[in-house]
Image (cartoon, rainbow, N blue to C red; front, side, top):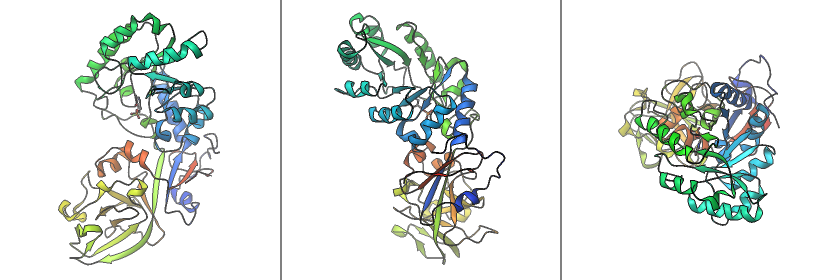
Length: 414
Ligand SMILES: *Cc1c(COP(=O)(O)O)cnc(C)c1O
């Protein structure tokens, strides 16, 4: 496995070279720059110190491959990982034997033995979970105790104890006797918007509620919240998206660089005449002589069907709006036209200058010219969903060397 230390120092950043190494049969490739990933974690660690910087690696490290991401972050110095499910915790445990692994989704009924078996720490969100985990700890824990975290709700109304439940737990000595509280946490609703009133409200609620449970390490901020200032950092921050190069926070640039590149092949180039249509339901009608590239990318690869463009959106050539989905060739935009189908999309390459586009060429889907956020906007979603949906048909290549992928390629599965 290629890890972050295999950076080719001073190497030219040449994506064309990287693409040449992709197997000829591969319809698409996702490059994951593990050196940039490690740099992002170290950058955030420095940014939030003296708070600890954890790493959220749920959903197979946001679709990038926990197998590669977790060892890379461990080697960079990360000691605390957050996953969503017990199964993810088991996978993480095998990859990071000495790390602390918190399970954000807590405990499903009857699952205590499985959670304990991989030595992970469930973050409990209901009184029922605290009782069940305490009951299991009583008979199975060292000295009748097991580690856990407590999630308290401060306004998101998703997971977490309500204020009166926090106070109830604080007085429930029978349950607390079996719980070794390692973390008290809450999650923010609007931390991407720096001026949103909910940020201060949740901060205030968290500051007062956590006190009820005594002096337990606390965590409030994810990728966006950690940008709100040191007052939001507490003892440990929980970034996910930012580690993978995402810019969730809208009030300024998070100090991270790009980790992911995605490219898809041109299968065919064709010329269409005004009045003709393209794709299912003939939803896009050409208003000019148009050169069309057909790409080996579709919704089965996680490319959202919402990125379809019909004539009602106006002609592609008028493009340029922030919400118009596009791919790039040599840094130039090719708007998506017609329906996104399962395995194919069609793009307008009429206005691409200086580069002949032919069968087998690569279109940039995510990269230096198309940010995760732009892909998200074009598909009426967010970069998070774009990442976690990148499909199994993409060839995956891991290496190190920011800013472009460059270095020793190690092949991933799929
Ligand atoms: C997913 C998640 C995170 C990480 O969020 P990012 O925005 O990706 O940094 C942190 N905390 C909780 C509770 C989460 O569910």
